[in-house]
Image 1 (cartoon, rainbow, N blue to C red):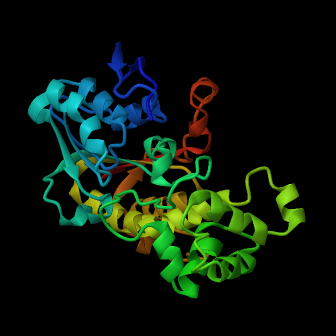
Image 2: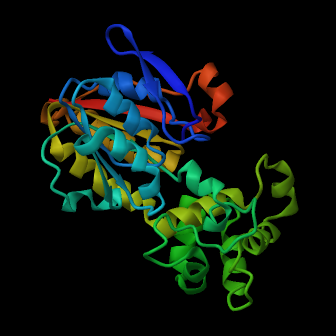
Length: 326
């Protein structure tokens, strides 16, 4: 998420310097996020995806007496938050919680909410978490390793319908029938237990011509689909966005960074619905029957510029959307 150092941005006045948090990780679209949130002195902001704390620190440093409530389901986030807790005291609070359960929390009114969706760079870079097949490790993929089934067990027990949803819908795999069959056939052999063997099972199921044409490893999208299924990532987004919007004060801002179309689709649909706009091409509701609860701050998603791309290649697929509650 953040690569150590400092960033200088302007928020409607003189430039301010934002010091960052965890060396080696860089928060995506930081300046653009801060421009949209534009926290006022005393504002209360929810960072629903704490990660490395880069966005949280920038928010806390942006204006006097700004406070941040942060969420993260990953227990590894707690030690990363120690520096912020020490520096900002009661202005910062980290809650050990999946943002999909935001509706259970009493946060009070919020002036801003930020979601930075998807798997964090910490999780990707920690080989034994099993999110990537670059390092052979147990196929776990859980964002919270204390709950739910690791991917290896999920693959052994999921129904065929669940596998199809993960591979075809979330993994967007063209040869999904072959991959699902290969995964079922591999049950009980031990080949689903570790990332390298799992990637091999998937790659072997995909036709050679398709493998040659692809610019990425044939298991990449399938790992994404399995990870989304194991962590209920899309369901969490669909539950969290209404809960976040409900907690916004009038004039409060909701900002979301997504990294692929599966995440961006429910975000775009929710934003358009709240802004009284057609949700899709088949939405023929007359304009005078639409209810408007927010105004869009981004007519189209904001993407990373050349400078950020050169320093942080993972920002390449990031899309940032924002709205303000009326």
